[in-house]
Length: 202
Image (tube, rainbow, N blue to C red; front, side, top):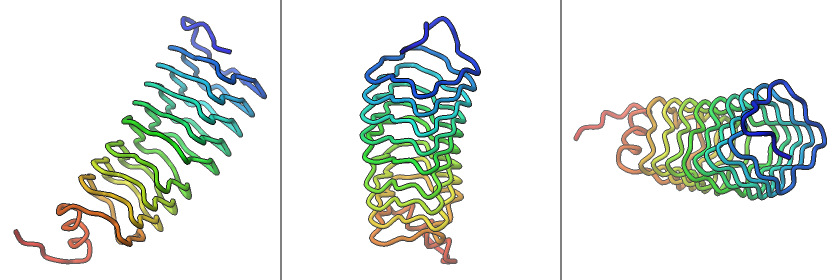
């Protein structure tokens, strides 16, 4: 059930609500708490969730277009088959969430915490992941072509068979990650070689 577009919602708690298949458009939620809310097959367009908390919520098969989850706290939420088009998740934290399969098209996930997340096989090409925490996450076979990974933390991150061609990697210590059959372009290979102390000359 959506709120009137002209009325920002602040500090409200939703527990066990059924929003299955609902459509939310141009709504603003500030510091709201969502617990056990069913958003399966729901659609959001231009919605803003600012500093909201989501606990054990179901986003299965939902679609989100130009929606922002800023500094959100997601715990034990299910994002199975979610579609995110041009969404902003900056500063959000994901803990014990189901993140795949998921369709991601553009957007910004800057400073997002995805520690220990299973992101294997996801197509995140062109995504802004600067300063994100990907520690201990599984990105096996993930597509990160042209992604912005500057300053990202990849401690004990699995990047086996991941595609990093065209990705910006300034400040990323790939020595801390597991690389096996990882795809790098020339600048990425040079970056890795320099991390290991090589003096790369043109």
